[in-house]
Length: 111
Image 1 (tube, rainbow, N blue to C red):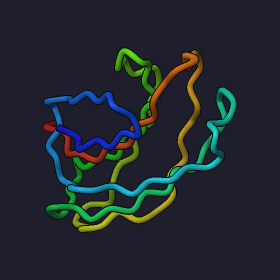
Image 2: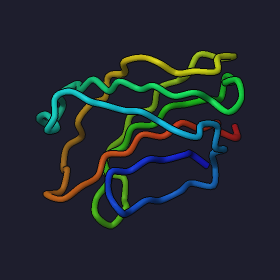
Image 3: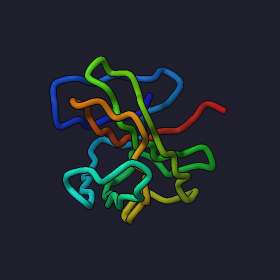
Image 4: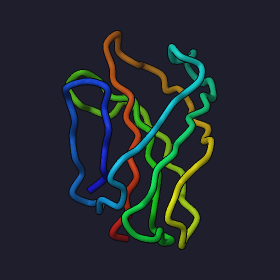
């Protein structure tokens, strides 16, 4: 399951992923979110609970109020590291509802 941090009251989990981080610090630019198709820059800083593997991924998603993911970007994480510190480009998806959340999670796929 991905560890997920939200700036609001709703969250959702995916049992396909294993938690490997206990805390995430994330900022993004521009804020507010840019226009459809724009590449935003997300800055992530976290310490992992165990070294990353080839299956470790960062997922950035835009979600509707109902928790449904309306767009996402996944970045691989370098194997055998214990901290993630860097900038990641994320594309703003089409059809973001008027009320939405942005989530960032780090996890290890089972595949």
